[in-house]
Length: 344
Image (cartoon, rainbow, N blue to C red; front, side, top):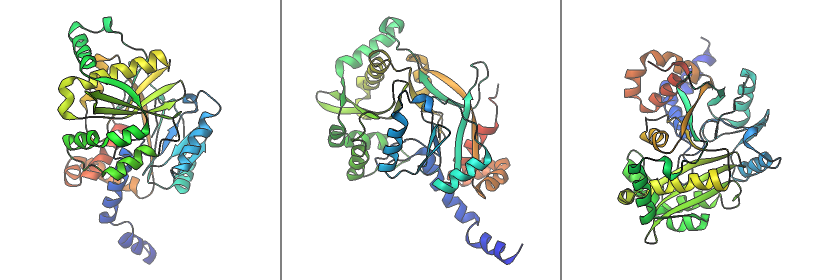
């Protein structure tokens, strides 16, 4: 190796430096927004098929640029970077070439491009999936026990649309209690929470907010990203753990599903893709009780050098390395989703 190569290894591509980058990349994959909520992750293509008007794509580009989010329009897809580059809503599929990935990384920055190449048949599951609901499940379709739970929540809680200003004014105690209840992540301060909520105020056609109230006290909220009349994506949902006994979550999901699927007539609502950091019971709960389904896709990753080289070397030792270096464990888990078939 020449002098320049040795210098690059010492100063730029040493292990300690790459671990820091992996940690930052993982935060990007989770998409920690200014209000601390998980949002769109990695280098994200938004399908043109999810935009039912000619104005939708330009409007989404306008929003990204106004918020300072690096974005690029490529083959009818908006790619945006929030630390790295993931599909929002139901993946329609796109086949990227290596040269296109390199151009996106050069233009937008980041360390990884993540995309899917379309839906798989239901009888051919993969490790990667998005959880959606295409039809509102009415009360008579639920079991008698689950109907009682929903009705209990609706009696004890009032669910309604709220403005960004109301969420900014009243939502922080819910957000803080929820984050502290989950553990593992420190909540942002109230000023950052307000900024994160209010920055979406100019885009009511793209973002909506919901509040759950018990005796006029906010005990939960949701932020929903709209893709015309095609998809309503549940971007962030937070509950005050002390109020869960009121079945606030049951009331919120039931009300939002009814509103978007029946009143607005969107084609589906979406609760996001498989969790990168851990297995969550939320997806299984929605599938089992609210009529959601898993839509399986192939996961594709393109790494900026030398991250791909590091992942390839570390992958055979992912168990030990993952325990020793938690940020690396998350990246290796994502790589496992890309490689591995579902185990019988």
